[in-house]
Length: 289
Image (cartoon, rainbow, N blue to C red; front, top):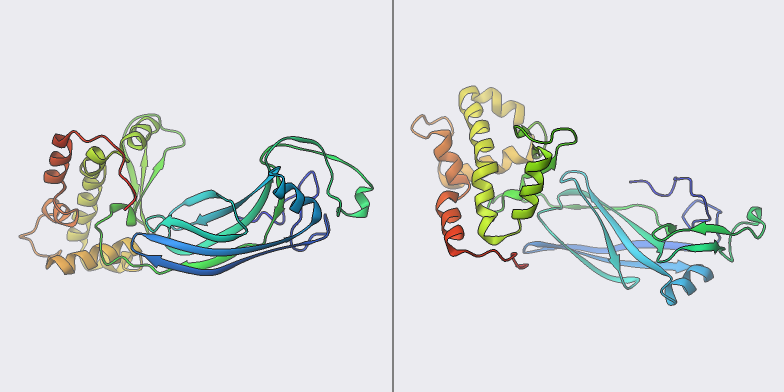
């Protein structure tokens, strides 16, 4: 996402612009994957008297916009320090990750004026509203290693989206990319969002929503054979599933293995686990591991 070249109705401190003089420097010092999380160490330098004072007085706040096109992850993370670490679940980050540092207004400011704004503004003041951007850095990017040797977490290769137009009806899926994209009708998606973080329902979601899709894909793979592999070998989900099959000692072309049986093995036999979780009666949200 490019925020530098946007047209703003007020002076914004940003690289390559003379809206306001000063400096905003954003740097990613280190990115490290440990266990189930990605740790991003960052540092920021802001040199602008007005913004420095606003931050000191808590009239402005700092955030980092983090975006991953491969997983559709887009989140604004508020930060309290100009140097620190952001932790994100590795389920959401793979491939190229883009980050932008942002300073925004905490409250409405009817007469905003940056003491270092360009002379063309000639003492003008501006209406700035809560959340409006006052400073933005250039975009920084890094890459997260794509480790798909295990499918213990189904979210590592399946992305669930909400339909823009269908309220209820059939679930649609698309596997012509790095991820298997499931598009749920609006009502179905809302129910999925409510239940997916509840421990007792988490595995049940894989049985209800994900398992049938994988069975369908595996059936097409079994029937099409080498042509299916040629068409999909470049996709990350395919490499992940194939790696899992190798680890399980399963040959997709073996007629003794039905697609339904293979899908259950890939998801580590979710029927038993789902019933055990539901019988436990646990409905609390899963804690971070």
